View 1 (spheres, rainbow, N blue to C red):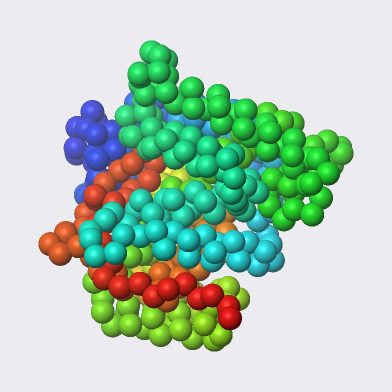
View 2: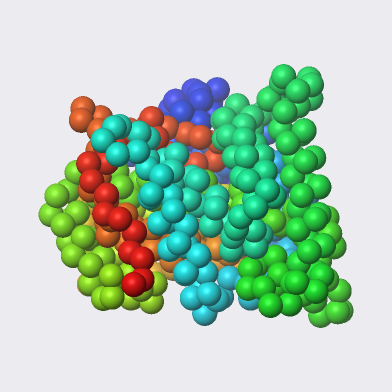
Length: 448
Ligand code: HEM
């Protein structure tokens, strides 16, 4: 037997899922319980899971028992079929093994300097004394970080062209309706899909040049992720093909850019109205900059920055759910899910479970001093063998950017702004990109 469905008529499931997923999920949970069934066109019936013990079981599934690639099929037109997000079974395991070393914790230290430098450059460009949406510069920041650390491009004409092309294509695919196949029709350069395809063709050419450079004599001393990926070999001694490399580069960009920018925007949404917390963050940033410049190592060890980052990812997760398509029957919470059924842990509902997080609506970065959630109790990055490959990268970047902001800026939410959430294609963001006012900026530290 499948879990019960909420009383809201089935045709409205998709509308509410797209419009206000968190309010909708909470309503379903209140009405039906920790397991409820929805029906979405194209995906069929879905069981949403809010119980941490149910999430634990889903994340314990073996690679041949639950397929995430099938659950992510809606992303195929944007990423290609060889993307880590789309693959399942042995091809997924092969790609994951080849890509994992570039994201190991100890690799992070080598990305810290470029993350801090990029944050400083973007902070210098923020307009002083007038209201602007914080999401914009944060998107620029995370895009630059990916270009530098993943693609190994930091300046020059190719950097500028890639920034422009990628910025525009990412805006097109952030539009929620683009997820529907009826919008994915090439009606020439004036149609959004036609424009997206034209931009993608040019990006493909530039990425091919990047791959060839990374493979050439200049690639040997490089520390970026692409330089590592071109060298990686599987057990049979084979590298990723050029097409596989290009699709993985685009995947890392799409999966790692908007998500991190949005998570940072949410962090500001919670911190800025809290004067005491802003003051604590300023003091903390000062303590992380003993010689005047921020030390990435100190920032990474800061308990307060860690708590703020975690709490922002908990309070409004950037991605509403993760999915697995069952490859064997699964008994979950007293229900029986058949082969082919989509089971979807709800990140938001787990993060608002009162048994785990007392006063779940409160933004409380100090709660992690006494509470270390288990892997299935804090799930902004999903879990199990499909857990986000960039989780450590994203947490590290978020802490460095927040430290940079509170070290140099006095920001506040725009007067009269009442934050709510809205959906971009796969992420949930603050409305209007979070309008903020920058009242003062300290100059960047220049070593004497
Ligand atoms: C705050 C930022 C981020 C959030 C909230 C986030 C969240 C997620 C989630 C929920 C998943 C699905 C996990 C699952 O199915 O269990 C995922 C997968 C993935 N993420 Fe992230 N992510 C973030 C940043 C990044 C970054 C910075 C990168 C890389 C540069 C990245 C690359 C990926 C990739 C490649 C996958 C697919 C993993 C697989 O299927 O094996 N993400 N992410």
